Image 1: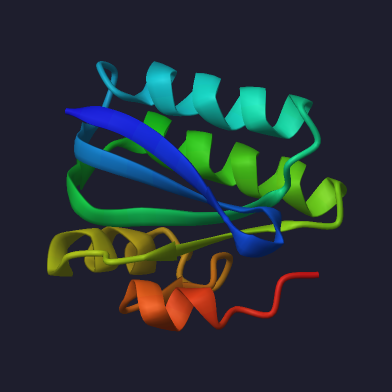
Image 2: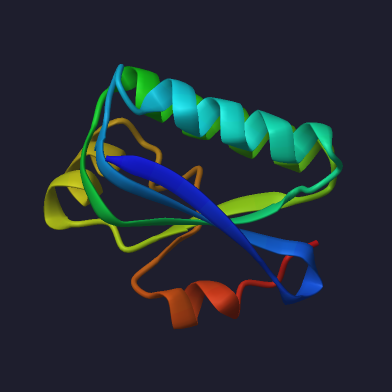
Length: 113
């Protein structure tokens, strides 16, 4: 279980979350997103291809990051959700909040503001 990031061209940051997005991993993800946002970065591709679970705290963390990115004229998009994560996002209506892509290649094509 870990969170990592790397910068790509156009000041887009790919943030990868591996494992369960719950009380053990959420603080690490929240800290990383906050640090990037505080340093003026506001374009994110969040890789959830290795995430196996997300709880309400994880969802809140993603929405907070998305809102803060939007406030800075940026965006946070997602890719790689497994079937269970897709169901959770659909159930809570987050499939209408986030741009969700099936692959990194598709997410890279996102038209960031």
